[in-house]
Structures are given as C-alpha cells and as structure tokens.
Length: 107
Image (cartoon, rainbow, N blue to C red):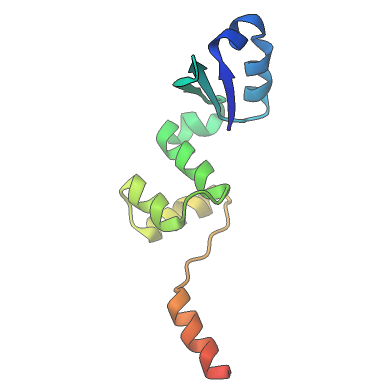
C-alpha cells in the first residue's frame, strides 16, 4: 500500500492518479496520521460492493485466507468458494492436519 501525505497531494495530485491507475490502495495522511484510503474504482466494486471487492482482493493477494474471507462476508466456506469460482479465482480447501497424517503413513 502506498502512502501519500495531504501536502504531497496538493502539490502533485498526479501521484494519486498514478497509484489509482495501477490499482494500488493508497493511504492518505495528514501530519503522518492516516485520514483515509483511496481505492481505484472498477466494475467489481459495482457488481460486488466495496467490502466484498476489498476482501476478494485480499484473498487473491494472499493477505487473508478462505476462512477469513467467508467469516468477513458472513457466508460459509462453500459459498465463498462458489463466489470465487464464479469470478474465475482459483481456490483450494484442505485440512493441513489430515494431510500431515496421510503423509506420515508413507514415511
């Protein structure tokens, strides 16, 4: 996430424009204190809403898990997986503990 001070924004607004065109989230600060976040506008926001779009971006970038995505959207993991599938986003649900038990049988 890029950070831009309000003074920098006043003297060079193109900095924010470039960040938004490259689809970067941008924190805007005043005297080093965050006062807002600028988010680039796209069709996903219209189709899914801002909260859903931000959470899906977080999932795609690896910042949140499938479980966290589902919890924050107040839906089941299966519904979250279906949503991701409809958007063409790959997802895999697995149980790590179960995988380790299976693997230990081969060792």
